[in-house]
Length: 93
Image (tube, rainbow, N blue to C red; front, side, top):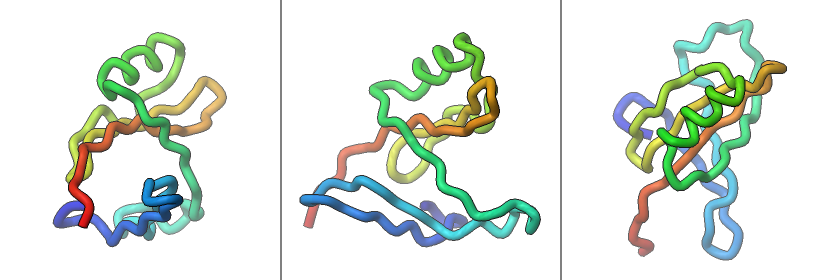
């Protein structure tokens, strides 16, 4: 997850990553409970982000690069958070 990120664990099914997780970052306030968040794979994070905002979502994390691709996080009008994700191709060893 980059130099300052924690260790990211991927779970795979038939060689395809289907789930991942990492420990809460130290900057998260202690009163925030552990949680899971779904990420939707999209062709273009920036376009999907704008479409979500236009449909009533609220920006939580603007489109951002990370070592595995690009992501953004929004919340729907009821407050449920979800991520938008585009991963970069990587060679398998």
